[in-house]
Length: 527
Ligand code: BES
Ligand code: MN
Ligand code: ZN
Image 1: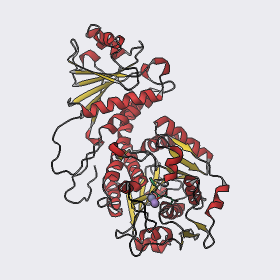
Image 2 (image 1 turned 60 degrees about the vertical axis):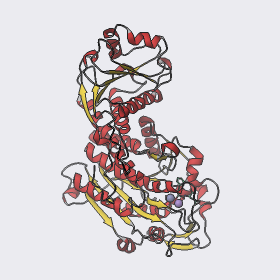
Image 3 (image 1 turned 120 degrees about the vertical axis):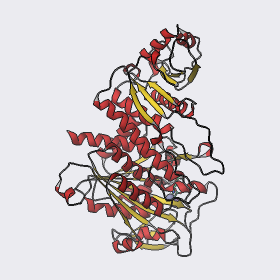
Image 4 (image 1 turned 45 degrees about the vertical axis):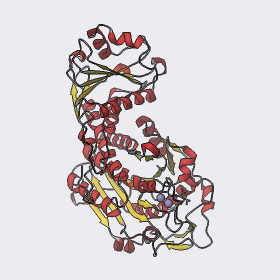
């Protein structure tokens, strides 16, 4: 994990790179391990490893399952200790539900249960048996290995909270074997690496997001990006306030004005595309990279349009877009994907300091278009619009921005999908499919021209808010005015990037979706 320049009382958070994966093809009943997880249907379709264990234990498993001990609900578990005739110390039976109603969701629920159990067991090493028969319809083994690996590694994530007394109890398997019927082919092996790489990107994203805004500042985001560049050998530029002034980023600077922390504009250049490309040799980014933009508001107080106090702590998560694109570069680098990717992170706090922007202020964006700031709490679009203008210099293949942009998106869609808004139907369709494939889903909202009228201002080219209704759409409609030079999609992750309440914490979304998208794009390039 990258070294963070944390205040001294913080320890470096523990991420998913803590787990080690191996592949085994041993006979299931002979596998010596602390815990062996087996996924089974509850209605009599039994995968082979299950049958092997059942036979070795003289029918103990089938007796329990037919007695109904294993709940029919997919993801339900039964943990058995010291099963006679079996080498594994523990057998974890995990329900896939009934064969007839089996699909992606049941499979994901089962794997999540395996992940939870492995993260909580006293066993130091564990194994999960996977095989072709127990796959959802239309899914192949490469898909299963990639997602199993990601889900299991992701569950190993823990935020290492700074407490007076560190928890010394060791729980969670650190060595995890995938028990397969035969040696995997290269694509299957790669799938396991890919899944883990995505989980490592998610772990970084979650660490950054979970840290308080006193620690995770724009400067700290920039240092993390620089560290990643050093670690993996790619260029990172960090633009300072003076650079932003030269570029005319008046909208971004208007948000930064109320904060004591200096703003940073982070540019990461991952050049993994065709080797020997001329531009690359000259240290330049080749034309048509994929550009990812992440909203990096390290704390959103609302500014002068101050937010109410309840749950305001959660506005430390207003940099989850930034965290996800920084995590994405880490995952891309770990996967060594043959892609050119540029990551842009406009990073600032939104604070109500004496120099803060006021409602009614008019500012000029980098594009030249002027904006009347009617509400300083609609700051995400102000920092993103300048980043979208900056993206033009790369002649992008496409630009995807990721932002905790609107509370209205959470009202519209709940916490299941992220909002997707796009001016390009093909890109929107591609992202929708990647969402379904990864389980990290998106739902498209319309972006018709009709909505543009809501942004009308008497004092500038546009206002930064569009009134009471359709807030997720008017937010995106605002951004679309700055994204005309390329194919563009916007992901509103306000409802999906973190959980509240007892389970409060970052989710690492939409990294599974981005991982799927980038892997698919890399595959297209190979052909
Ligand atoms: N970061 C917030 C959006 C947000 C709010 C995300 C709550 C998750 C939970 C964003 O900057 C914001 O304040 N948006 C305003 C926009 C409004 C002023 C037009 C909102 O959603 O209320
Ligand atoms: Mn806000
Ligand atoms: Zn915000």
